[in-house]
Image 1 (cartoon, helix red, strand yellow):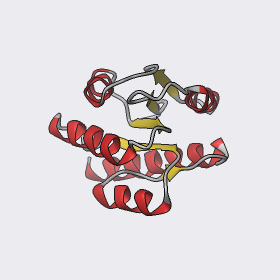
Image 2 (cartoon, one colour):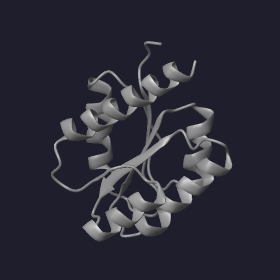
Image 3 (spheres, one colour):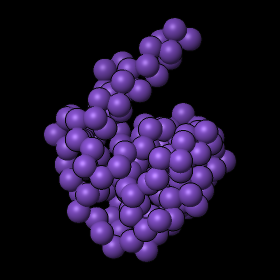
Length: 140
């Protein structure tokens, strides 16, 4: 099955800074992925609903507000409640290393801090997707 990776990029919460999210969305699009950008001030419920409706492979959250320990787990919980634990939840922002580790332990994918080259995120998503495709083909 050769198809583009579908990614939803979202800005949850009250943070009004979306330049980084737009740069990431453009880089993912340039890398051949289908990207849906939800815009600013999204609730976790809006993000999870959009992810399910759009049948995405990946949700990327951009959080600079400091609310990452609330927002990432809530989106993850909502995706799981809707039976979509197959969606990779990743993202970036101002995230202390210990918080990244705690979120990873809860099931959130790799997270990226300021200044990370977009190529690192692209490689991570492509690698994750290739592994998922390989596992699905083995189960078929």
